[in-house]
Image 1 (cartoon, one colour):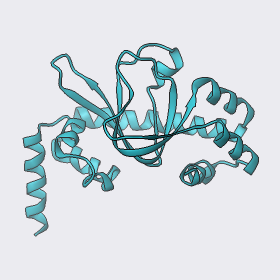
Image 2 (spheres, rainbow, N blue to C red):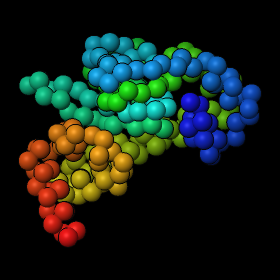
Image 3 (cartoon, rainbow, N blue to C red):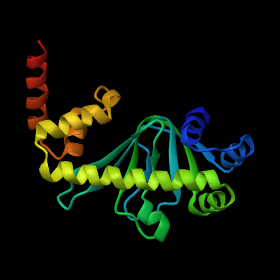
Image 4 (spheres, rainbow, N blue to C red):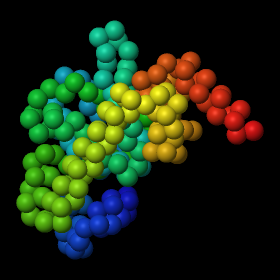
Length: 194
């Protein structure tokens, strides 16, 4: 269960066995079911989550009631509403389990304590923040300048294994295109490949 996390934590940062054990011992391990909400709009985000197994989605509900997916978090990814967690304010987001999953949870206080104690974890946290900013920057650029076809290709490149795990209407929501447009793009790609 901790193997995936260990591989990620130690890939670029030096952490001792004792430091890793400290990180693991402070985690809450939860098996969660499909469609379970881990965060609901209006709640304060209490946990930083690592997806050990499974798939989560982060989304918000527009005024008209439609769902806009902001992020997919497959195994090996972190998930939280960072603003809500840091400021202890009500979240505007929802985090839902898309497949039966195993998540590792740390409260803001526990994570802050671990970061103070473990320099390698501080380095990793800084790396995560920079990656998150870069990812947000890329997503914004894509949303304002990429064609629907380009957005889909970026999705395929970023999440190749999700194409068969995520329903078409959710991919369309993530890309900000209609389901019909996405169907047309996928159909055209199939024709080109034959």
